[in-house]
Image (cartoon, rainbow, N blue to C red):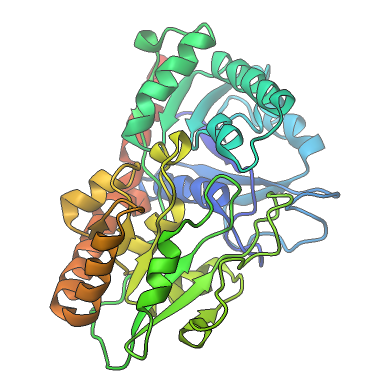
Length: 384
């Protein structure tokens, strides 16, 4: 491949001595997957001063092949390295790479950001939504190819391309699922004691816990404990201090409240639990979500309780890697919790299936295969 590939992150990436979130994991996973296929790829992460995730000074990421660049230096950074290909996550960094001669731009439709604003509680302002819509349309119109984080978002991307004046039928589009490290325990053995459930992930204004959590609480006892790890994400202004779903009496004695941690430690925490519960209300945004915390749970050795209508749901169903239930279906949730407590063979089978799903779908080398094909096609179109 003639062009060097740069994956430009929106967020803190693993190895920065800070907790990470979905956008940073996405960029790092794509870069790792490309390298696994022998493609020269550099992960680029912004750093700067002010109220951002990248408040200086922070340690540079420890992984080789990662560049830390100030946002104000980003355009010069890429201009000096063209011809090259850059993958941007959503539209966040488009203005920093637009108009650079010799730079091929791949737009990653990672998350439905406009729907996040519209489905937030309370919704974002009309001005903020309109601004994001315009930025997104501009970035889509200026990109050379497109990837989507989950097949359900393909029609969503087609609609946006049409709005941006781009013909979807003539566009290079491939589905590239979430790529995260797969770190399963070799075997699953319950060593006795209580079943351990985990509810984890940043509190987000568009994905708050619902009444299902009370159902989980009501099942807790000496034979079933729950850990909650729900810190407030730095980008969610006004979302509260975190762990707002922690219960009071009478359930508190069966609940452990955990704090934010580095990604490797977070994955280890998941691996120490039997099942991850990741339920939420049905919204337009959640239906198009490749829910990162569920993906990380599966990649860390835990089957999941999950709704039946997200980007991850068909994958969970096809591998029988968890339980798909409607969040409001209290009777089914109670039955699933009973099965988890009384049928360790079922949990063990679904745990093994979670490992198979993660290795086949979310391991970076597997997830990046369609991206490699797209980049190869772009490279063939580039004049020599």
